[in-house]
Image (cartoon, rainbow, N blue to C red; front, side, top):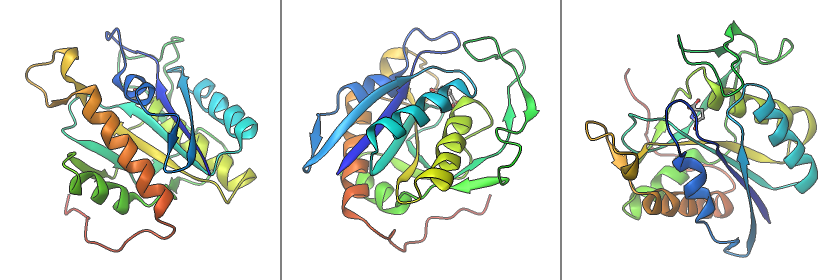
Length: 213
Ligand code: PCA
């Protein structure tokens, strides 16, 4: 088995992005599966094209994209990506693009669901002491765009590939004292557990993990 896992370059005012730092700490093999790591630019569409190239080149069985969501309090396994590129005010991507509610793909559906075993991934992290939860929005910035691009590509070109996205909180060394944070080592442990869960779970487990709002 082969797993492609990606993190992002730094963006905004940050000089590092813990998503890639946590990916970098992963071993090159997990439970017999080869782990391919890559760093992705924080740029609408360009990031998605880079992931598509990597998927065509490496032909992974599983793709896990990782990004930072400062302010979240746990490892967030994303359920859904939407066909909407909408930049927050004053927050262009790293190439200066600032789309205002455009579609990622004109011919794409409104949304794609992750086809990773998201509940099993969250449970495995929680069972091993890493705070984790399912998230029902990946936002409308570059992370959502990357996840949508991956799932569009999977649906059109390689339906046997499983893929999705994990958002990580601030890293403690980023020093945002009023916000929740985790160490990069703990994030990396969570990613390793998520990969293990994805490798060992064909069909997602059935446990209640919805929310009322
Ligand atoms: N987080 C941003 C883009 C890059 C990253 O790490 C996001 O959540 O969209």
